[in-house]
Length: 205
Image (tube, rainbow, N blue to C red; front, side, top):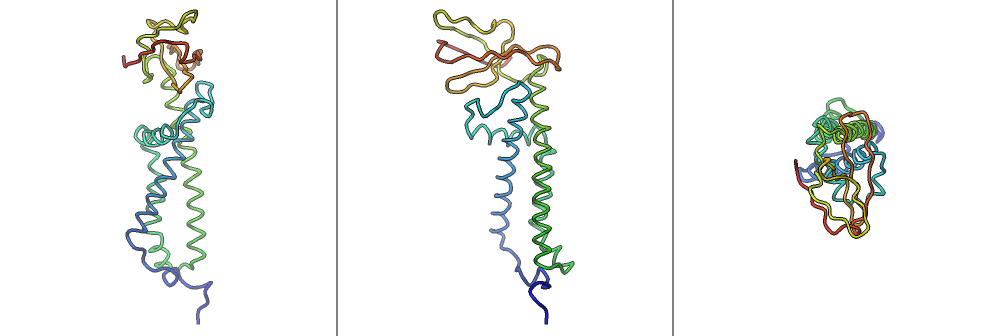
């Protein structure tokens, strides 16, 4: 007679319904999107010498960056693909090798930790790469300040004709800068308050 600790995984868990697998996949994807969005955002603004926590960014911005980071850096899909494959086929593998439920659970936890660590490292790399790209004049994708009308007694932080770029726009505070031709140099950021300006228009090149 076998005991609970030595019972193969197939006798402890039945085949999961499709709905449960889809739910697990969705939960995993959501977790990775939030992780990638948060870490890559932190790495991105760190290239400008800023902490994103002080930029009045909304949760939607983090989620958006989590999604677009995957598009800009497809290698971020690798951890998700590995974890998804395990969720879909891990139990079948455990059954084929007669693993105990405890062994299957341990392998799952170990894989989750590995996926999170790899995702973190890849997110840092993606955010750093995007930040360094937007620092340089020839590669930046940030919007150009087309028109800036300061209030009375307020001096404009940069000339519109100089190719001034808008880095971040919160409800009260904005950051603008003029990209440099040297990708290794960090330009000087100018912090301005929206209440001091009658109008600020941006656009693409």
